[in-house]
Length: 123
Image 1 (cartoon, rainbow, N blue to C red):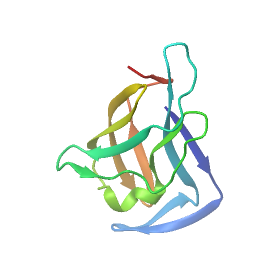
Image 2: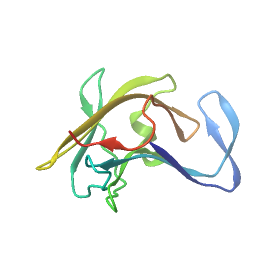
Image 3: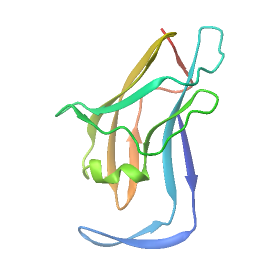
Image 4: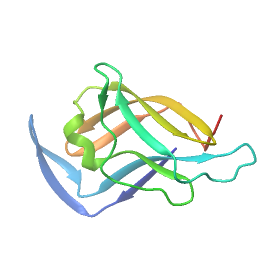
């Protein structure tokens, strides 16, 4: 899993009042590879909130060299201030990859807690 962030200084207003935060855009993504480590592009992807089955697949798109956007700051309207469990699925003729993670929105940014590190191997 990887984080990408583009930043400059700014502030924002959260439901509890003014909150100091950066004017950055966070992207949480995954690289999916085959058994030999070659990145796999062109898979169908979905991000699902497990509590209600809502499809919260990001509006951001990817798909260069097997890189897939899992969640981004463009998806904060789908998130609460408390962590919730999500699942990311990627499928195609070559196989499938899936993992679960927790995410929330703080201010206007996503915050993700994921047990997965490194690339996901297609099964």
